[in-house]
Length: 186
Image (cartoon, rainbow, N blue to C red):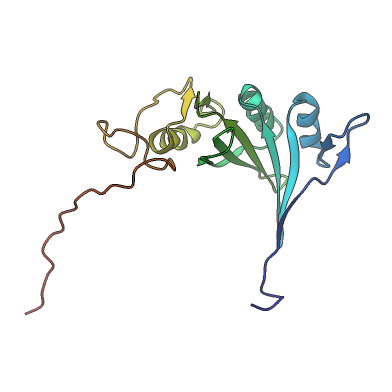
């Protein structure tokens, strides 16, 4: 692969350091206001060729409040929500949310660490209605519950299914599939 074709990706902590601490503050004024409001939030920038994402890692206690404040600050487009299993890490799971400010043309990735001992975080479906189905999928496939969710039930798997198949410690197993006879041309 030539040098022009390769893409570079890195995570940096660009921004202005907060006076009197080692904390890095975002350069965007809306995100800087969020950083001041949520002191435990850690901001960084993910850069790839031609694009960058602002990333904030927040505690599960501040998660719902930060999402609501980001919505009020102009991040009104919900893109997606997913869960990631890091089997041998503490906390074991991450919930990752992507939102966008259309007017500013900026995206924000919000990461929340979720422990295996209590895999639950607050639902954001009251802030972003579209998060409803993404949260149900994370519950169904990874076993993370979202408190105050209007319908925390399975969405992809049958109700009688046991376990959560996308967890890294789930058995691989198999389900027999009956295919119809294929059509053969005369």
